[in-house]
Image (cartoon, rainbow, N blue to C red; front, side, top):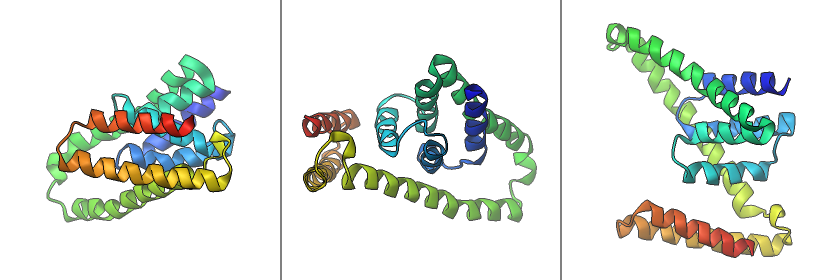
Length: 187
């Protein structure tokens, strides 16, 4: 039964998510609450791991959820369920794209989809911000200490992001600094 649930849920996510991996986050928050497969804090950990591993974030997160829920078969099934709709839709679109490329209806549709994708990504950003910066229940710290540590970590993160961008440093350095910062806060 768990395999059927994984397949159906990730197929629906794959069918309705437009805009990349970050747009998957609101669906994952809802899925975690619906089945109690993972907590809200687990989504932040999934995101961190998914962003640091090669591959699309949404696919990595579906694999992670599938593995934690139903082991190796669950990870394969949830990943497959997530990508099937995209492959089918892309194949259909590719077949007809030349015919409808200049259509005002198609252009208007894509113009209307942009704000929805932006809203999904913004919702994901605020959920991650709320989970990671505002509370740290997973670390067993009191809320005032956790908030202080998280705000300091967020400030360091912003400074590191600015330095990496300004000094044209490699993003791996940024990821490594974030991992070290996370370890230092944890212990």
